[in-house]
Image (cartoon, rainbow, N blue to C red):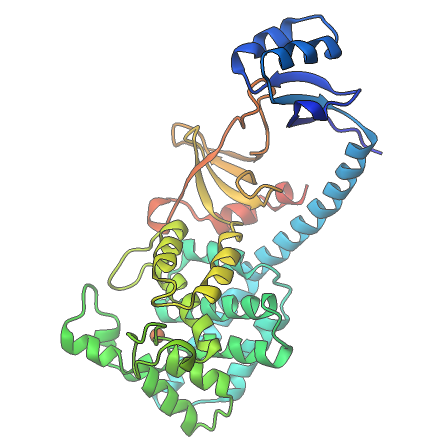
Length: 399
Ligand SMILES: [Fe+2]
């Protein structure tokens, strides 16, 4: 059994023997509490007379030891999960990209092998990836491929994990994943100068781009794609709940539920990536934009579920702390705001030998964390490759 010292804020009436009072909700009393020699019972009376409602206590108990044991188990499974995902980023993600690139290049010359798409779909579905949010987060920092390939793989990964989280069966999960891979396939039939144009599209160019759902749908139908889920994701992922989308201006429940899911994942990944016409936004900005549009552009129920899921996937994100240090989130804490981070830069912006810091460390006197996250970085704001840093420090992550 392992003893662990815990600091916890509790209501003043929740005090138990064995706890040591180290602070309270009236800050001006804290110095008195620490310097006093009186018993805890006498201290409680004094604090109550001052109207104190909450106290900060320090304690070690058998229960705590049991909690520590559970923590140990979850810590172990989390770090294993993390490492297998890191291996996926290193070894499998680049292969998926080149396989998809090969498929898309042959599509341009009207050749298409649906079985090759099945292979990628199966690889995504059966890989040991448990946290595709992590993969999507981390690969955003090192995407050098043409946008369409990364974006298609990302939407497929997010679709796969969303389908699993929403409780869809294996068949539907596979088809949603495939829909994610192929949702923008119609762009391959549009003038590449328009698709890759930097800056805003003019009216004619936008009208051309808007053809891609129909072009993709027609192409796959000709190749005898029989999955209604895939076909409707391809055709309807730009339809909007309020009927202001394209190509058919469908609204509400006339849009396939699978296309509704794909449309949110598509929008999220597009907003958080550098595209030809806009620089990447942070996860928070993207979530805010989708939230504001929820109910009008996106189905509110679906977006609530998916945005929560995306928001809770913070592993791999590069963050700035209030100390001005820069770190990468390597393990989610019990409280999502206080994860473990791998510190890579000091407060002066200089690279340091990376080390793990637990943001769940509190100042016993104030009950406040020593350090907190104040912002998330986008790709353009960082000058290092987080994937490489994580890979170089696997031994630290494994401890
Ligand atoms: Fe699209």
